[in-house]
Amino acid sequence: MGRAFQNRKESMAKTSDANAKVYSKFSREIYVTGKSGGTDPEGNLALRSLLERAKRNQVPAHVIEKALKKAEGGGGEDFAVARYEGFGPGNCMVIVDCLTDNPNRTFGDVRVCFTKTKAKIGTQGSVSHMFDHSAIFVFAGEDEEAALEALMMADVDVTDIECEDGKITVFAPQTEYFKAKQSLIDAFEGIEFEVDEIQFVPQNTVAIAEEDQEMFNKFLDMLNDLDDVQNVYHNAE
Image (cartoon, rainbow, N blue to C red; front, side, top):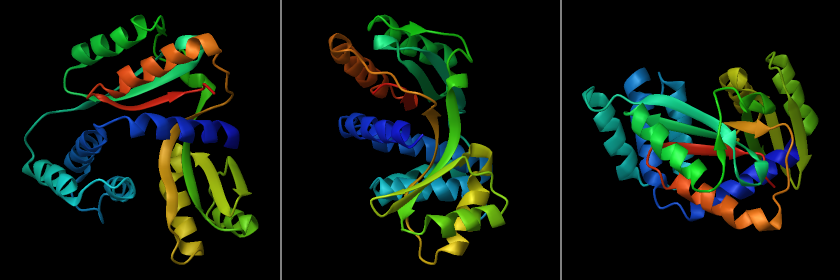
């Protein structure tokens, strides 16, 4: 699982560097999370975690404040989660998560990304069963046993834990996210998470053939350029 996650991290870095719309994506997610669960981070744990992640990604304070004020107003757009699955260039498996106020438009836009890169959009569930929907935490540390003990004491169903290069990585089912995070905060004073997210992690990876790599990169770029797309997960190396 660690190798698959590392591939995912490297892919995220490459695509996010080229994605000038990252602030807009965070703004939309903050707005939706604040509108649905309240704009007080102390009472909305999902929002609190999202704000921490936005700050780690250097989202400017004024972008965050504007999204929260918009959510406080209670009006504005009604966004819904939309998830699309399929097979990308090189026959890799792909999950595309969106927030949309117009599902027909979003589906059409995502489908174009598939068809123009000779990829194939599938039905719901066509590839997601080959991914683990995981809570992932990465933080500085060497004591893997202490981390595992803290998680077990909190009755967290740990999927995997590893320690490498002075960093501990914890994987748990996404349903255990808040419980796992709190147990680590309680166990390690002053802990700072390098990664604190819920992601789809592939159960296995496939190498993209050299002749498919250019098309695969184009596919990712097209998806990440769409305003409605929040995250793209895949099992390509």
